[in-house]
Image (cartoon, rainbow, N blue to C red; front, side, top):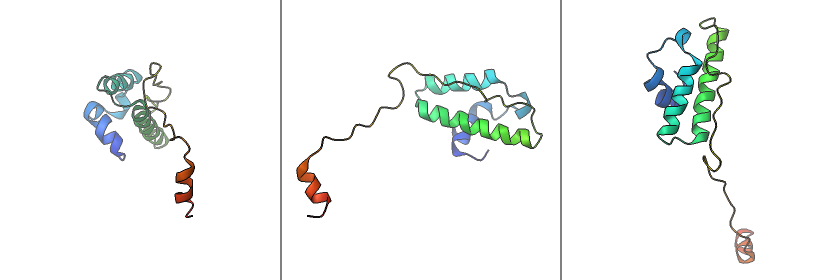
Length: 101
């Protein structure tokens, strides 16, 4: 598996499963386990995306017939997931320093 995320999250859970035997249910269970151990929603999405791209490649090579990760939805409750970054308030005294005056 090429991606570090695939090695870290997918291989321990699904590494013993043949690609042709991988199911959408298994991918959904992986997502649930990741969320249970409080892996961030953006990371869960990246992992499922990497798995989906890997399976798309496998389809192109005729190694599998279907992409078990395609269409898997990662949902979070409102307020769950990454927090928005809020810029600090504007300070005119800092502007002079950053502009080199």
